[in-house]
Length: 368
Length: 254
Image (cartoon, rainbow over all chains, first blue to last red; front, side):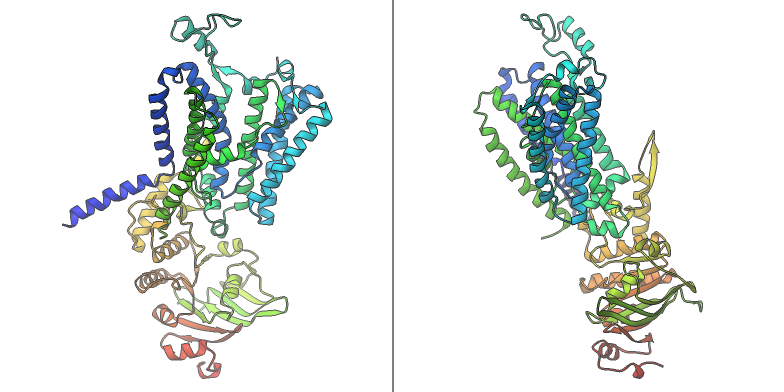
């Protein structure tokens, strides 16, 4: 019966197409994680508005750096300097604004310019020397961290520089990183009694959640931008090609080096967004900020289904990977589990994700 | 066939430092003709096609395209002159979809509001038509190249080159890694392309594959042309022997 066979093969092929979605694993992972915490942590307030804001913000932080790392990994490269870049950009903002007295907007723009230029340099060295970006960016992990501590020490004799909140008070750019939006809507919701208000203390009467923090807005904007860039534009096609097979892409006329360097710049941009939101939020910069962030970004991307070898992956997957990260980290806190176990969980999850991805890769390329 | 060759390479020399890779190679290529370039490993085949495709520049010698002396300084020049090269294993990107591969570097775009995006609808429908013409049954334009067989991949790469206006198609060992059945499919594709008036330069060290589609055969040995013969003037044994260097030029030239 050839028609039945045909139908079966069609169903099977549709099934395997679904399996080949890079973000399938992350979608399943997110569902499982939410299900688990919903069952064990429902009574802890984890899923109240306030609790959700808590893991939502942590997830957004992971998303911001994961999006950059995702496009870069699909383009076939790594950046291990992301964590150091976060510390570096933060210290630049604090030193130039607090110590040197620059207006905060100029400090923020300077941090972006310098970080993105360093990102371009890492990319340039990588494509020109043909060295693995793993090594080139590892060098910058140390160079940038060292420079960050050095700059902080020589300018203030301290590794933590505070006082940013005061100088940023009437700045026009700072609220794009540290403010909240829809505060009016949240006030109104509180007045209607839909969301709770603080009952005591200095904030008595104000809603427990006063708006959507810019950190979340950045996370969402970056996801949308990167996802559209990757899947809808011709530049996105070149990102896949640069990571899938750089030589073949060059033969066909794709400017592979330019694509790769731009992705390093984008990763540095994301790291600086992260740094700026933290500096404005906390009102201080610390030279040790961002440690291990590069690995957390890479793990999110891998959980999201991207291949470490490049050419395959999804921004949505990476974002979901970051959400898994944020929910589990905060969820363990809500249910009172020793937080060190979070790292054990991460390690296990990373291993499972890599094994799954390798299998998927064999399915797509038809390799045995 | 017109008398004027599409492309002529005369007395091409190429040295890399002290090593003379090519010591005077001449061939002429006509439209609608499959010209086989045969030779053992190290005979200079790959150096020669790299000169044709602009990757290398000759140390001395003359290149004529449509009868006009032309310099090919880089791969872009070659592409602009209608010379397309399909490399053995560097043609396509296995993790990407057939459609994304086909249009890579020449993506069709459209405007959605202020942003320019790829026009997947148009890309996919043209692709399906082209694949149909060349005899590849695609389930879906978004399936990855990795799901196609080696022969189908070569065929897609050839179809792409022709679609984008190649007048001279250089195929670097397209059949060397393939089984019998897939080889015959690729050879059929070459036939089809040639009928369209495209000049095919078919590089191979497999004499029987060359004899199956070739109109002319040029044998290279140690950087020199041993001679060119037309289809029917030469048989398997002679070509094979010439490639391994047993026979002299004079015995073959007519």
